[in-house]
Length: 255
Image 1 (cartoon, rainbow, N blue to C red):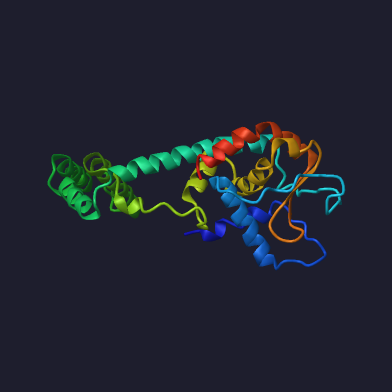
Image 2 (cartoon, rainbow, N blue to C red):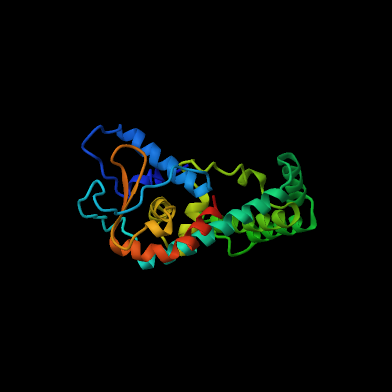
């Protein structure tokens, strides 16, 4: 499975490292990822530091790379992707409840494709095609015929036996490297999956801060580890603040 497609995006959100008493980077990465996931699931976590307070450390201007910056267009797609991911997860959960056991499914599929009326029709379609003048014996013809036959068999098996339980294993844990729901949702709305993952990691820490503490300028939310901060430019703060309640509800709905 393409585990490499999902990176530790908790720190694509820009980590600022303090010069004194640094925590090992691996611990910082893991701590931020755990904190973001805990916030996403609604678990109690340490209250984030108020953002952009006078004298906050560090005090350098916040700069977020163009690739990681949150803009209006990607935020709208993000909301659509959250809704698509929720629908995907709900549909998978519904299907899992209706699945046959693997042995029962195999038995049903064999009967359906080999001895049922519909199965015999599919086999006759195959035999007729083989005997047809259109059969020139080419690889292209045989490949197209095989694909058509498989599609017909899949159709009648789905109608008679339901979904294949082999395709609906246990859902991955929230910390799994590969999240099929995330990939499917991002593709559906046209948002690159890595950007979708990065937006999840950056938005929740900011929106977990009390509304009265978010401020109106650039923002820093303290992460886990000495001198680790989630950072946000002023335009990002202005964009996120009025939508935080909506975003948090949508993210927690898929946690």
